[in-house]
Length: 128
Image (cartoon, rainbow, N blue to C red; front, side):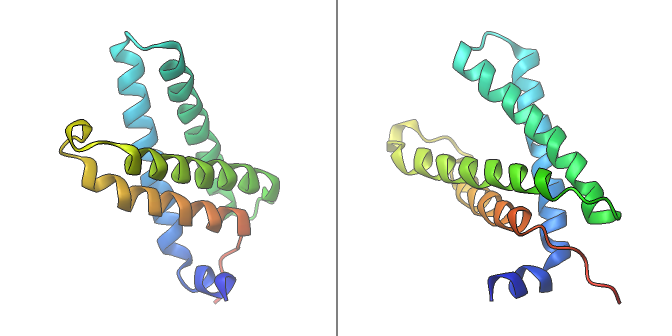
C-alpha cells in the first residue's frame, strides 16, 4: 500500500527532494559563510551540505538509469532521521523560543520524513 502510494505520486517526491536540496544548500552555506558557529553547529551544517550533495547524486537514479539503491537507502535514512529529530526539536520549543518561521517547520519535517521513506523504497519511474 505504501509503495503504491509513493509510486502513484512519484514526481511529487522527486520535486520535494529538489526543494529539500535547495533548502539544505541555501541554509547551510549561508550559515557557514556567516561564521561564528559553535562546533556542533559547524558539524551539523557540514553534514547538511554532504546530505545535499548525496541527494543531488541520487537524482541521477530518478532521471536516469543509474542503479544507486545503496545511496538512496543512505540518503533516505538520513532524511527520515533528520525529519524526526527536527520534529522533536520543534515540539520541545517553548513559546518564547519560537520564531516567525516556526509554523513552516512542521510541513518541512513531514516533507523530509516522507521523502526519506520514498528514498528508502528506491522506486523507479514507471514506463509509459
